[in-house]
Length: 297
Image (cartoon, rainbow, N blue to C red):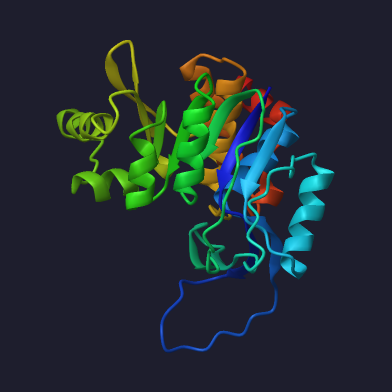
């Protein structure tokens, strides 16, 4: 019994800034912070930290960044038994400029060139599949093989590969950007009729379950037939990098634990909120008890 996290791993190099980046200027950098990153990696790290069995299905190169990532994941007891066998890939990495003033971030990702590979699904008892859409064929292979597993797509931005996976999963947990790119419409929380139409359009992708995350404005979800708004928890935001990954990892954990949807949304929202209070993605993931205590306080 375990959770599969399928998708991208990366090495993050985070550079704190005190102002927005402006082109045609020179910046003197006096500090930087490094840690593992990538949607699938961050989610798997959270799941392992919270005590659930998890396997990361991702491409990690045989290089310095890859070795650093693997060491941290092994220490956290993230399963690396089924890494995708792409011998030519260099570990993806990102330069992330984090604005200390408002917590926003600008990200430059170097994904590496992916080779076509043959990946055989292992004989596992899989309860939950979480995909970030970066390995669509492998994800669809997993969804087909593990018919009893609950499948989730972390849909950050609209791409054909993400859409292809979204049509087949049980839960579309997407960002406001994905909803806007897919529908061509902007979510206005002051107009319930308008945002309900957008929500229903996203639901039509697979006619199953949808959650739309709105960052600091909370999220939209359906319960008892009604589309509802769940506000975000208020925190002192320092760095939003990886908050979405944390949300999705906590969501998968909640599904694995067979929690009620509203409770899943609470722990996911609180975990993501707390993660923004410090620098980094993987390194800012809170303990489960911290999240629970914060919800109950």
